[in-house]
Length: 85
Image (tube, rainbow, N blue to C red; front, side):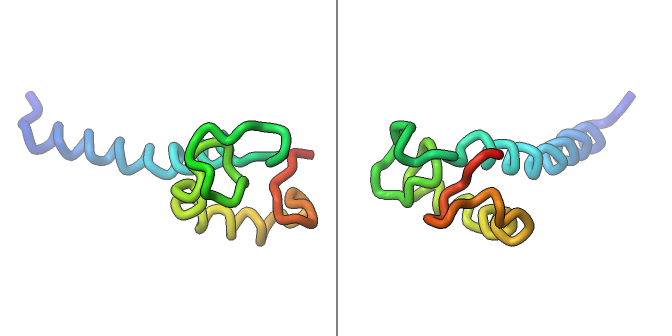
């Protein structure tokens, strides 16, 4: 029978494994391929790169956006917006 400490360790381990998956998945779900074609349902003070969250999304996803731009520059158009190909 597992004790309370081992169960908590398993739960914490699972959450730590899920965090990067949820972060990257959220990035790709929110990145805006056409900033003029979709409404911004969140705050309107952001760059327009994300479908929701405005400036908040700009700050949260900044590291992943830099990595995306570095490894896949062809997915971003000349205006710096993400585009699916």
